[in-house]
Length: 280
Image 1 (cartoon, rainbow, N blue to C red):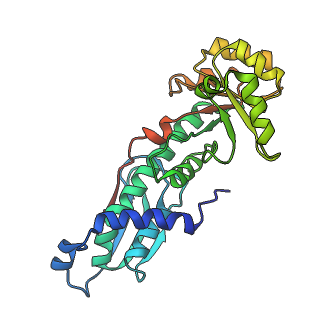
Image 2 (cartoon, helix red, strand yellow):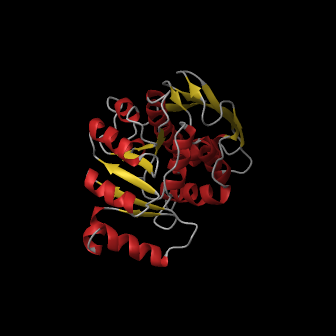
Image 3 (cartoon, rainbow, N blue to C red):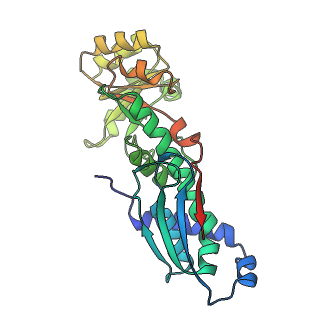
């Protein structure tokens, strides 16, 4: 079941976007042109095929601008849609709808783009055990919503931030003086509920990580043949995550090596916007 972020997490993000758009004087165009008592019904419509995400943010935008606006979702987040599909309808004072329109569409178009990009990778690895996961390569301020959009596309979330898991990367190893001292220092101060993931870029590093009992190992920028050898060497002793050079053209071959997870930064930082319009 798709679980959206709590309203307390969504509202500050949407509020900041509205504040940025309204500036110091508000929507001068709509306020001058549209009589205050004009009411209208508008429809959010997908212009292109894709996977929907972000209607919860659009609903929040309309509600913050004018609580009297009535927003009804016709096609919920996580749905696959064709061009022309009705996603939601909003009814009430025209000024409020016009004022919230761009922010609502910005969120819905971008987040649906993330969900659509994720769904393409998920479909590409269907039939394998590999799960598609996102990374921390998110647009600043939008992480909670982008990670939600990944779930809308059938993907899974990696850690949300620096505080909910340990991920030891190459620069950490240089600073710590190697894998063994890095692991030793982490274990000396880490709580028992947190997992340890280590990034490796060679089979030699993988063997050392396995000897130290690391929970998860990130196999960085390895070719499929090397990934297969890594899976065989690991023999289920650790969870394996493949990362780097993950595209629609390569993801199936990566998944067929037997890794558990495939992480992609592109599904959040480079997802094309899904064209969604608001029609009066």
